[in-house]
Image 1: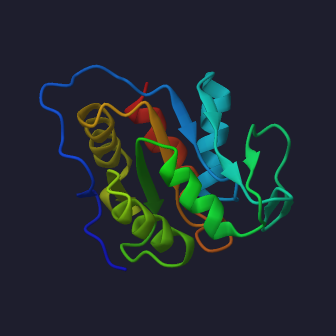
Image 2: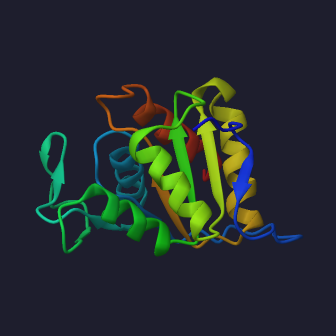
Length: 173
C-alpha cells in the first residue's frame, strides 16, 4: 500500500483553530521497533501509555516485558491487537522508513480507514523536523488525546525506532 508520506490520509475533518496540546496517552501493541520506541518514549517522559497486545504478550523477540502496561486480547492474533488499538484511540500515526506500507502497518492503515479514524503516515525520508511538525499539527488539529503509534517491527525496519523517538521528542518537547 503506497501512501503520500506526511499527508493526512483519512478520518474526521481537521478542527479549526486548535492550538493546544491535547495528547494524554500513547497506545501501541508492544512489538519491537516502532511500537516499543513509542512506549519507551512515553515511559521515559511520564506520559501515560497502554494498548492491546496479543494473548501471551507475544512479540518477535519473545514475551513483551511487563514494564509495558498492555492488556492482552482474547487471542494471540496480531491482527486483533492491531484492530483494537486503532478502535480504542482517537487517531493513529504509522512511522516507517518506506513510503510503501505492508504487513501489520498496511493492516493498521486499512483498519483506520474502515473505522474512519484519522491516520498519518510519517517516513524517514521527510526528516525528523518536518515529520515532527506534521505530527504536532495532526495531533492538535484532531484534538487527539489518545494516539495509537504503529509501524514495522525492528527486524523489518531497524531504523524506525530511532526515528519514532526523535520525532516524538521534537513534536512534544
